[in-house]
Amino acid sequence: MDAQVDALLVESLDGLPAAERIAVAYQWETLVRRMEAVRHRLVAAVAELPKADLGDRSPARALSTALRISKEEARRRVKEAADLAPRRGLTGQDLEPVLAHTAAAQRRGAIGAEHIAIIRRFFRRLPGFIDATTRQAAEADLAHIASGLPPEELRAAAEHLAVLLDAEGELTDADRARRSYFSLGKQQPDGMTPVRGNFDPELAALWEAVAAKWAAPGMLNPDDPTPRLDGQPTPEQAGSDQRTVGKRNHDALKAVLRAILASGELGSHNGLPVTMVISTTLGELESGTGHATTGGATLLPMSEVIRQAAHAYHYLAVFDDHTQEPLYLGRAKRLASKAQRLLLYARDRGCTRPGCTAPAYHCHAHHIDGWAKNNAPTDITALTLACPADDLLIETTDWTTRTRPDGRTEWIPPPHLDTGQTRVNNYHHPERYLTHNRGHDDDSNDKDTDDDPP
Image: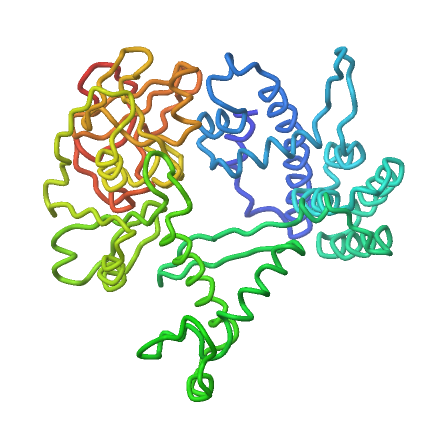
């Protein structure tokens, strides 16, 4: 197959008439769709491997490491393969895919990725009370009409079928629980972060009660010299409030979170009180420009950092602009001290395993040389940040970590997952993607195993 693709890549298409160009494009699309069906079988075969043979904590993470694809894409492929690849029963018998008709249409090359995404979304949102026979009939119908429709029309047909099957709108509590969520998007270049969500009835009712008080006109108005926190706003305060309803809701939610952080009732998390941890450099703090980084990887403008520093329930770690070296904090105990965790938050900013985007708030202090295996000391120079799953990975698989001469942490995968990927994580320090100093920020992997990595 590689040889045939090489031949096609150098084949000139200039001499093909218009009709033949379109015909070849259609043939190629059909072939690519069929190849996706092969990939489902391969992914399903990987998913069957025992964890000991997998070399990682999940099939998705193993695929992400070996294929150098994102964790989201790897998880999508595993879930898609679970629906579209042939299955094996508990006694070893061969079973059809969960979406048998859709899988058959894909094997013929009649439907593509967009069609499949629409059909799978239809079943994710289908209420739980729909019986198995009706589900199978619906899947057969959708797979059949998808073979002759573009995705836009298939989506319209699927939405209409969903309305017919749930004519009474009889969602169960389990259905509502499955559909409820609240998530933050990626922070944008302007500093703003989009949110998405779907509140269940209880959360909506709770928010209504809070918003009735704190999102009312004149309450918590940042434009007031003395924003009102309690009681009723005066007519002047309410009348001069130029904020939209959405902005008042935003400010009310901010006040709720400030209040719960200040209360101290959230306890501790990973050895620190639940609070906001902010790290910056002395130069940026003195100049009042630039950004600081929180333990959750959010960038804060320096003006906001200075304002936040006035609140006693936050931590502010300030580092020298040039050295960036933490103070030596020797400790013979198993658990890192609060001061050490603060230094790790500021230095690493998040999990140091390549490909992991977990911010510092979600990480543990990991012993680079392994506490359990080597009884390593809990010194700041021997610690790095790792999310709980990746920390466990070192203890249960053949992954290893070590410190480079420049002080950064390398993650070395098992041989069968080592396909030349980077061994250090720049995600939490994006400025390093643009730095190519040999011996410091060159993160290529030449698979050397000596003590002086490139």
